[in-house]
Each structure stands twice: as C-alpha cells, then as structure tokens.
Image (cartoon, rainbow, N blue to C red):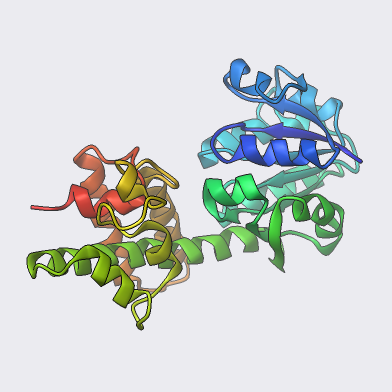
Length: 291
C-alpha cells in the first residue's frame, strides 16, 4: 500500500480520505483547518511540501483553481517537496488550461500529474461510488488508477492533461442547465396546482427524466433524500455550480462555441446568489427565484 498525501479535507475530501484509510493506505492529511485534518486520526503535515516529502502520491480536493495553484506551485506547495516519480492527482474541478500548466511545471522536475475531477457528490464520496474523469498521460494514469478505483465505481481516462477538466465542465454545463429547466417547469406546475409528488412520479417515468431530477427535485416534501426537503442543505452548492458554469462558458468561448442556454442558466444562478442562496444546494435556484 502507498502513503498518500490528502490535501483538502472538506465535504468531499474527508469521506474519500476515510475510504482510503479503510482500504489500508497510510495517509498524511493537510487542510487549512488543522482541526479538520486531525479528524482523520492519522499523520498531519503543516504544509503540502512536507506532506509530499513523506508520501508517494498526493490527492487534492479543493474548492477553487486559485487554491489548487497555491497548493501545487506555491512556496510551500507540493512542487517544493516532491521528487522524481511522485504523482499529483487533482480531484477538484477547474479550468483545463490550469491542468495543462500544472502538468508542464511538474513535468520539468520529473513529477507526473492527473486532472481527475469527480461526479457523484458527498454521497458518492462516502460510498466510494464516484465517477472519476481523468486527464493526463497514460503512464500517470496507470500509476494513479489503482488508488482512484478505491474511491469510485467508474474511472475513465478521457485524454491528455486538461481533458478530464474539460469533460467535467461539459457534464456540469448539462447538470446546471437541466436544474434551471426543472425549476422553471416546477414553477409552472405549482401555479397550475399540480401535486408535487404526482409531478415527480410522472416526470421520472417520462422523457423529462434525468439524474438531476432524481437526486434534487426542487419542490419540498417529495423525497426526504432531496435537498429541498432539508432546507436546501447543499450536496453541491449553488455557488460552485455558478463557478463551474463560468468555467464552462470560458472554455466554450475559447473554442468559438456559442452557448446561449448555459449563458442564460448562469445568470439564473448569479441572481440566486445575489438573493443569498450561494451556500445552499444548487436546486435552491428554484426557491431563490420564486416571485
């Protein structure tokens, strides 16, 4: 078993790290909150550089591209402590260009990297049933794949550095726009007096069905597992969905692709953020925009 530096022990990172511990791996935890890192009950390093010195591979689960860049390339970052043969696996969601730059910078010192964003949310992280979408060299993928398979029901290599991030942004463009469409349909149905439970049953049996619908129907009381029935407690926050739509639109623009549906959806999330719903689940776009 390898020793793994796990950096970012938040809502997604902590359950993933615990699954690796349960599988028998040694972990070195790093987090901006030392108390959160201590929850692992294992070794804790004060900086990513020191974690890299004590490990064979690093997994990152962070909330912003700026945090990823600092953790990897900062003065106390992984690059400062990594040695030839080390592998950096970024499981955060960010721009493909950053993934390509990290791969180039780390490659200069003989360190491999993978961009490996995930889909499946906190529940998938807890149950080890994530989908991991991987970009990077085939050699780096071969090195990182056994560890990623401990965390996922599906691990897919989609291409070179940056390809994992690009594919994840395509996924979140669909998810974000789908949620806005569901919210608009629910608003119309509510005005028509259609029972929410009946609406949910018929939609999940019709062409309007989707995984987004089945996991976060935005009307209260239909399923206790959906955020709407728990005051929109975040499985994936509205703020993060808005961020990912920004990144997806930047990627589309870089390729000259028009994306009016994603553009309109992003504006709906931005308006919901302005109304104070940023920390809620992204299905709260429905509640935040009700008249």
